[in-house]
Amino acid sequence: MTSLQLGLIIAGIALVVGVLIFNAWQERRIRRRIDAAFKKLEDAPTPSAPRASRRVEPTLGAAGAGPQPAAPEAIPENDAAAPVAPDEPGYEAPIDIRATIAAEEPAAPRSVPEPLGAASGTGAAIAARPEADRGVAQPDTDIECVITLQPAKPVAAGALAVGLHARLGKPLRWFGRRGPGATWQLLKSDTPGEFAEVAACLLLADRTGAASRPLLDAFVRLVGEVAPNLPAAFVAPDTEGEAARAEALDRVCADLDVQIGLTVLKTGPSTIPGTRLRGVAEAAGFRLAESGRFEWMHEETGAVLYSLQNFRAEPFTAETLRLSSTPGAVFVLDVPRVADPVRVFDQMKLAAKRMTQTLDAALVDDNRRPLDDVALAAIRQQVQVTANALKAMHIEPGTPRALALFGG
Image (cartoon, rainbow, N blue to C red; front, top):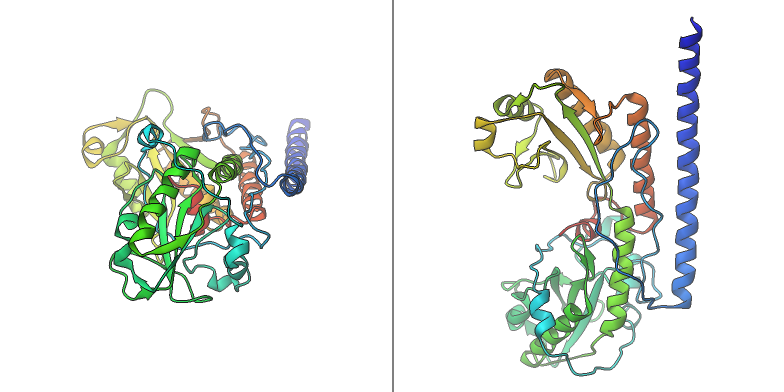
């Protein structure tokens, strides 16, 4: 063994050890920030803070320099109960009407209610359920502004038509239950039966940003329009406090919003014919989606695990793939939106390596630097760090709660 080989082996071992030490330090740092943030929230329940900056996809560095999720702050809670468990997916794509909301007249002053979770016990009831039961649709007081309505007598879902068809710029859900302590049911216009209690739920933050004070005021006005039709009494929340809570939640999500990209790139002037790329992608199990990307989906659940997008800033379509070529394609893993992100990263890494060999290309990061096994191991460790941080914030990757917060 030559001195060069021995030196390379020693350098590689030192690099791996350094990465492990750094990531252990990073996790301890995240935990300290979480504890400090919770203490701060106990002292000031409705903190005001500057709005978070725009989220960006992290750049993958060379070996040992994977994407670093910033240390998160704690999710602010509006009650003393344990964090609410994931709820059922069903959030609709937001429609931006902020300009319209801002132009409307301000609502009349309203009284500040007792926190909904403390008043109704919703948060504690959900948190106390076994893990297997937490997929049931429920109002999520940790990430939604929830207003409960108490009808004078049980009402059908049709009486909520104005609210069910409203669009406020953030996902809006309506729930009903047949009596105190009964299970909440996600309502649609054709949901059968009558309900003794109704809950209106507006998501506080997603990838489009935090719910603003004007938007929350519009939400309260909407509930005020629905209530007389039932008729029902309700207590409006403090929209200023809810707006502060939305911004704090948005900052947490921005810190943990990590996407991993592995690029399959042809070297030199050569490119990959679109028909060739489509054939290789479909043979690997990808399907071309309307989003302009190839998607690899879980066979049983249909959930998208990772995607393959154009290296160029152009979507893939059947027509463009037939007529044009591209220098490469990017495998993308959206860490918060998949269950078991580390396992999915391992699958994506193998698929990227296979495609690299098939297309006689190179596997590189966003800066076109080659990704060897040491660099991929460092990136994998960062996926694990992000997944752990999400779980510490009670945002289990791939659950309905995570899909809501990291959608839009």
